[in-house]
Amino acid sequence: MKITKIMFSAGRSSFLHQDREAMRRGAKPNGYLFDGDPVLPGYDTITQPAGIVSVMLQLEDGSVAYGDCADVILAGYAGRDRPFKPYEHLPTLHDVIAPRLLGRELDLFRPLAEEFDRIEVKGRPLHMAVRYGVTQALLHGVAIARREQMAEVVAREYGQTISGGILKILSSCMRDNYNLHDRMILKRADILPHSSFGDIDRHIGRDGQLFLDYVTRFRQRVQEIGAPDYTPQLHFDVYGSIGELFGDRAEPVADYLGRVAEAVQPFELMIESPFVMGSLASQIEIFAQLRDMLVRKGIAVTIIADEWCNTLEDIRAWADAAAADMVQIKTPDLGGINNTIDAAIYCNGVGMPAYLGGTANETDQSSKITTHIGLATRPAFLLSKPGMGGDESYALQINEMSRTLEILRQTGSAYLAHA
Image (cartoon, rainbow, N blue to C red; front, side, top):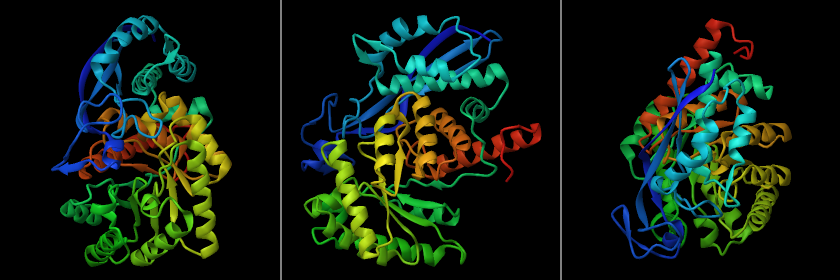
């Protein structure tokens, strides 16, 4: 089935952009804003609204496939593309992408996605958000044309087997939204609260006590209101703040994480981004040192890499180095979703656990498509998205997986694993 018309519409993301470098350099908070000037290119203010562009493909039968161009909250940081602004990229979408899409046959996803992911304009790759949205639309379009679920398209073209059950979800909650925490505990979220602990003075404490108090209270609340058999993993994203507190030295960070792990017992502790260094090589090096130190000291903490995992090549470097316990495949950062699929399959192949993440800054459609990719590639878990409301994204992903799996069971899909 061919593409007969291409349309684009600008819209809103589900969250914001924030200049993490300005925040790291000491910009003072003012509510959810920050006083001071932005540092990274593409920012007009330190916190600013973010936009998306929907890519819509009308097919011969009148049906419409679509995907959403979106990028991450901390755009421009740790090697990422500058913030995505729709008005800057709509001309490229109209003048470069649309003519190449018109009339194309939607019989296979992979070669089309790889083609459009590789397009360059004036010798430069397209913004990762553009590649992300266009390839989403292509996957959706191929699924419509072939009358398949998107997970089936991925499984068929990449030689995968679809999960027979619901994947685990990391429920992403705002740090101080305690009512939301309660709701997600009652809903038995697999992993929580994610949150953000990126400021030493406000979130960690110069002696580390603020963070220790926070994780202790969280653990106590899980025990207080959670079901007796509820044993979630406790995940905290620190954006390099703990490393910065200890001068980016592995041993004192390991010792401190040992105290954190003790504070959350009997639950498993997961720490994302204990360090944020200035390059991929230095990031891998310090993570490897920390992981080795934790093993030698017998400290049970799952260390997750996020920053400097921006491309398929980055993910492969992390997996080959075995420098972390897990990597986040942050879907918009990888551009074309073909790269996300390849990254997940590569990690599975070398035994590196990975989770399919992304950002609160996405949309319902990009989240649904990530969910289908997850079913087909079977990562350790998914990140709840879009937004930071918890309830809505958690329900969206659970329901999308539940519907898809029931359809596949009822239709007898050849790609579905036995539950």
